Length: 163
Image (cartoon, rainbow, N blue to C red; front, side, top):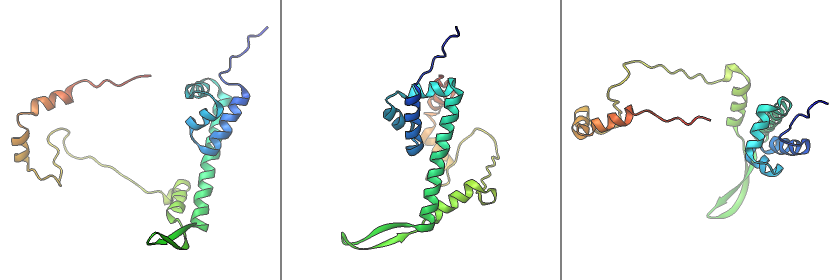
């Protein structure tokens, strides 16, 4: 007989988790709803290709739901209460052009904002902040005695946690 493949979650728990995730988009909330700990979900993602595909589909469904809501708010607007001195005096509809622009940026390259970063100059030395009130000479006088301590702090090896 063949050995039974171990599964981390039963199918009904997976379905419950994925349904909740596709509606709310939060792993921690979906875990609570399905009565599992987050590590169970992440282990299933690593070890179960079908579950990973189902999770990716749920993630896409959530993103599409948010996109549809952004488009709706941009086209139909959202009604808001207008108050004056704490009392409701009316209602007005606010339209969100920003939501529509973000949807365009995500879907079409020609609407994406371009950001280019260039670095010139030498690495190291003193960083001079234009808004700082100290001149380079004032800075040297103020921090001259502390420089070795600061150097030690920045030259110390950094412990990076590994998983």
